[in-house]
Image: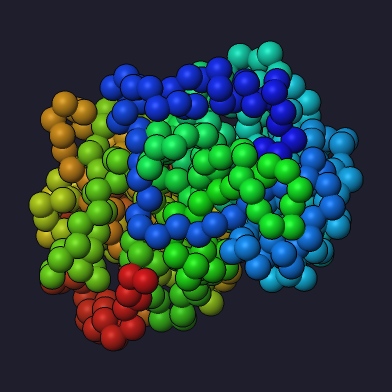
Length: 450
């Protein structure tokens, strides 16, 4: 960024020849070339190297956002940060803070320093971890340090922080670590129309395309950036994701487009399908099931309940996307966790996963990972669509389900009514009068994809 002069800029940029020039790139690099979706929005990033900035003049020159250096590592504070932070805001420029990250130093101390600097004045854009220094460490250690910083910042700000890096640095010095949940701020100085971004990201939010920009109100060169989208898109990005809603006393529904839903893993593996009758709300996500012991892609539905009680949990398994007979759903309810196995192919529609005693409030969820045990070469599709909770009327409770994963740790709670693997009953089957009436009532209150 702006504090990078010859040594640092060499490390991230010009030593990485293909990133700094228009020479050809190999197949893997070419595959990472990602153009913006359409219009872009102009922004800058600054530090004390820009001296005293005339922020009204900057705004008059068409700059609509600015990333401002807060510091370097756990102890250094940029001497111009306070002036730039207040000056950008006064000029009507959206602002975000970035911290030059030193992986060889305590990542938690660095995160806490930045968070303390932003306390009471967090800015408009998520804070940024500037990852362009390995500190002589191997990639796995750098990755662990970056993850520790991100994990520290995320719960405090309530969203994913931004990661700033370059193609070669992230690939070679961070091992192409998958932190794609964080928006990418890509660094590449080139005259090309589109950047080749760091793997495994498949899109970029910001692109720093030059370090030699000229902007009114700033003496000398300044880094200039593009935001991938319109000004309205930038405002929506700054506002952050919509808060996860609350499930009412009678139950509710969470679709894959709801703020309470998160689809995780590389974006290329999460296939979005839309169309009349395709899943709940005419859309769904699917991925391939795998035999891996650890998941790569997943669907996660956060549950925030207005009232404690016993609820029936149903999952949408539309054909032909719901094809795995070994879909493993994790359920966290009132502090207890269960893993249940379901045959998605058994019902084209809603299937009953089980009955669970939920607490009022949040920190509860349903989770579906792609590591079902199905052969990866078989290309078995796994549907990630919607879930429903329906309040169980008194006296209609069902016994403990028989589809609990044999490997489950057997924590108490989260048990009840069930379905055998492959024997669940869909919404069109015989679920009992109380459940049928509950589903009918919920249809009018379905949450739609935003």
